[in-house]
Length: 146
Image (tube, rainbow, N blue to C red):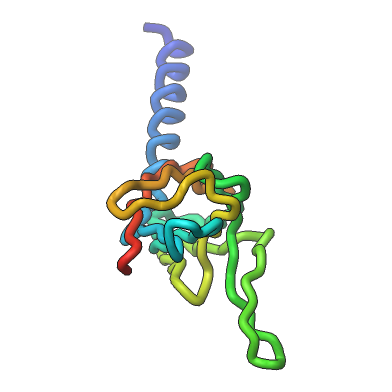
């Protein structure tokens, strides 16, 4: 093997390794999705997103075929004490070595215009989109009792 082909093989191996490491950098834990009932037109998903890399990342988008629109949302309380859900276009920062909690009453994934009701025990396919890690596909279990 020539020096050139050895270097090319090494670079190719490193590129495959770094891609696998990027995919493993983000871990989703304790995920669940819910809606308020069988006739609900909206639902939400909650989870802990852990960044196991040494590079800061940002969740910048989300997509799923279960609803007409899927967005990153948070709750904001106005000066009158009224809570509103708002779309967070810039996404959520997930610093290196830390986690970000998507929870009820806080940051979450919002499904609007559900194509079908969420059924207890089923799952919702969701693609989380990160600046650094790229797309991470997760199957989020539906838990209407939580």
